[in-house]
Image (cartoon, rainbow, N blue to C red; front, side):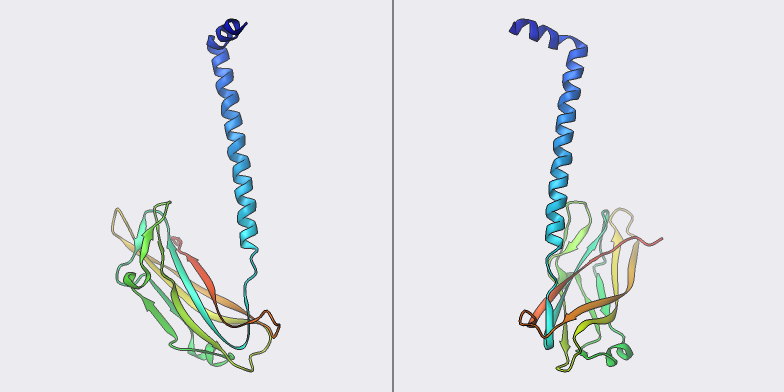
Length: 190
């Protein structure tokens, strides 16, 4: 009986059918693996963002990523700027108001997708005033990422006018000192 089975599999149609079946099983395994990874990723992203007590010291830890086929501009890969007039209206102290980093500061490395990402956080210190109101503190910020094409050498930048949100609470779980991770994914602009 074993010989008969082998003969059937040796026919071209059967070999193709078995190959298709194995391919479909493998594809199903990949889909299930992706779903499991996606669910795990979603679970990780549900990690609560820390909240801070009024008067807290908050360190913003910026990480930057540039697309595949690009590397950071060697002289100035990233900058974060706070508008003086806007910051003066808020219950915070941010000094200086402009941060510019070099590649030496940020130690970029190549990503699996062929772009680059920084490995050392670009740090910005924010001090909340002791009378900072509870709730979400919204701080306008401008983020610029400068990067160059690996093959052709031309350079470009991504410019983001955005709002940074810091949760302020007087709960026992609120921190007096801590950090927030901010990841900026640079994109080519049209």
